[in-house]
Length: 639
Image (cartoon, rainbow, N blue to C red; front, side, top):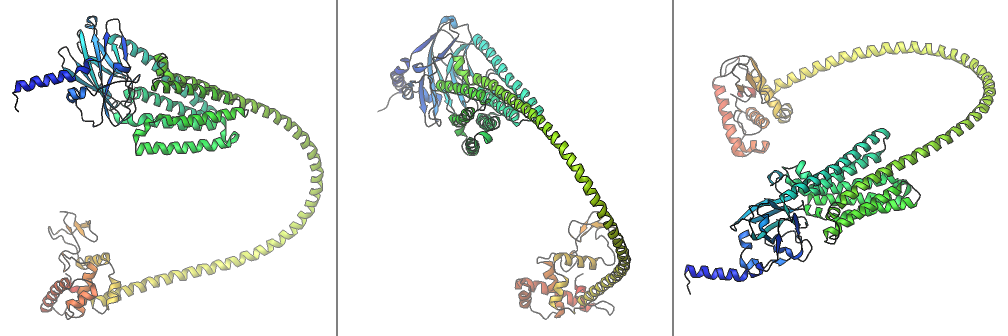
């Protein structure tokens, strides 16, 4: 059955209105000029999970997908399935008093990868705006740590706003309407608070660094690393680090807070060991802390190298925090007084984490927003102050113990002085007795020394004789060495003569030319034995070339190898085997077959035949032009 185009359009319009009825059932939030900000919660937000991650904005607005939006049953919705894309929509009725007031929507969680807002204008046409931790900070609408989307030219009426969210972290979707005036007021106060917070951290760092340089206690240095890790973690979570430290490198947002949280845990545990003297006062806790540091490091490396999404599980930090807290309680019960400030500091930090956890789960709605959102930061500040007290208390106790030890030392020194006087008197008497004995012994030693002097004079005369003999032996060795050098030279000359006259057997020839370098050296000396002359420009000066034993003309830079213009030019077999081949053919006067050459040299018979043909041809030419004064030997075939 066929429909006309107008009928199809009418049917589609009716179906759209039918399926869009649930959309109009959503509660519209009325916003007038008296409302400066509003947080959307519970069923004021509707959600759609896109498990395929393929739906576009046009697909979401289709009637079939519109029906799939469900009312939010949490105080703040979240992306429970972090592999999916989530769509959120809210419905707002703007009062006519808001027409001239600029406003915006704001998202709080700075660990959100991508947020796209679809904002309608007066004609109902939507404009998409994109922000998030995966996008360069400088591309944001405002240079602010949160994600803001401007409501463009609002007029009186009802509007539906869509938001598309995708993140590998578990985030709370907090959508807030704010007027632009209130946003500026809020942002200025918030950044002032951040300045105070991070300023205090810097002051604590500088103070404890100076203390470390003064007293050389490692606990001060570990404490500096710990509070710096706290600062980097808070900056990463708040979005301050992305704004000021790496605005053009959003990929660091995936690793920054996880790395900072790891450093925070590790340095907190190491600081706990050092401050509480765990190795001396609680050996079991000392081992437990070390094992925890090792396991936490392995977990961090696994997250860093294999699955960065595991950084989102921040609750694992409750384990090192609990171990440090338990160690502090145990050591405090053992009588170590500085641990009291440590225990109090970690109790407050536990409170801050509990408030933050309850807020994330939606149970902190009864608390003021300022307290629930900044609870961890405030508790960190209080903890830093109390830990500083703990360090100071430890130093005070150590100084007191040092003063008591000094007093005890002074008393002991007085006792030692009295003992020393009595011992000195006894020693003086013993010295007198021993002096008399020493004098008697010294006389005996003098007599013995005279005897030794006489013997030493005899040894000196014998040494003189030995030195003369050694010098004569050295002179004879020098003469023998010269004779050996001359003998070696004569042997080389005889061997060269035998090689040239083809008197050597195969083993002797192999010993004379064992490798490529010796063959190149022989060719070089044979080729240029009279003088060097460039084949291009006839220049006679040269320098060493790139190839061993080649020569380069210093005038035209032409480089000539030792193989050029020899029987071995364009040689495709090892040069030392080519030498053997020439030697064997010459020594056999050309009677040796290519098969025999192949067996002796380990080369294919066809290659041996080709080389044998070339060499035999050179032998025939030499035989025709031979004169009586021409030297004999296989080397005459080379050039």
